[in-house]
Image (cartoon, rainbow, N blue to C red):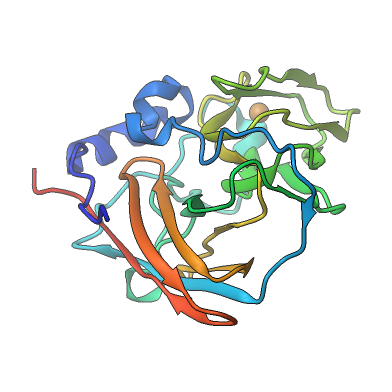
Length: 266
Ligand SMILES: [Cu+2]
């Protein structure tokens, strides 16, 4: 069981990285241990039913939150005009009590080899609104529809930066309000960026199973539908790395697993 905090990034990284988060190379935005897919086995078996067990928890930031500068949209007044004030930095979004948003949590070990689960018929939606990606972090299943919206009515260029899947790179002029794609392979979290607006950045993880969740500002996640068993679960943050924990879940049990992320002292 590995619970060690990821200590490779300091306050300076968080602070200075904010202005160029959208243009950071993918390999510096993702720690090495996050580049491994959660489950690289190709699904070959029958489609399994969902179980009645679950894992839920809360993600908390430990320490004094750095005062990150707002996104700079000065280069594109049309974007800035869509907001009534500064747009807060997205790389560290905290709720009351320092709960953490935009943490992707998934089952990274312990699932049956080669197993297969039904792909949700509902798409995962990424909107471009106010020259910001909403949501900022998300998970999707292999083969699940990914609907990319352009609510802004202006030019964006959506560009995914995977290492395993084929990149998706598409200009979306004002008149193009939606494009759709899918991902063919499981792949740990990678960046989505806009080639027109360098501050625009989102992250997506592609999973061969439905056992993943992304936190909102309340920091909570729930991964439902599991069978009883012992699992490794991983929690990812775009700058503070990936943590893992081992947890045993009983029959129809709602097990708890919290994570805490911290920035080492400068
Ligand atoms: Cu854009």
